[in-house]
Image (cartoon, rainbow, N blue to C red; front, side, top):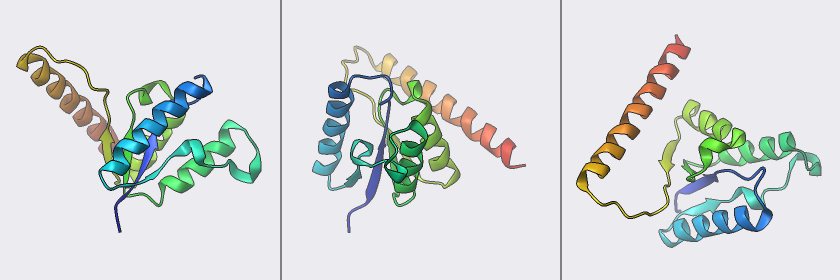
Length: 133
């Protein structure tokens, strides 16, 4: 069976066509690579109540069954996506940060972006370790 992954990104506050296309494009991308994708735009809210909390509970429930979470490019602008990331970290899920493709002019930009990502991941890991103590 193929690995199952959960897509996480900003939904609240965006126009429906905008977030739907973003999540559908990400789903197509990962399905082409053989993953079974859990897409939150298709998850029904808990008890059929269309509130933010009922959607989040249903989404996190689905995340529990996945090995991997994919953080879409705007995840940091979403309270729900940040919560999903914290759940994934606590449960030691694999985390993929999906960034939009853009032109990079120099090797220096690649090195700087990679180093900045490493530093942020290291800071987050240290904060989590301190929280466990």
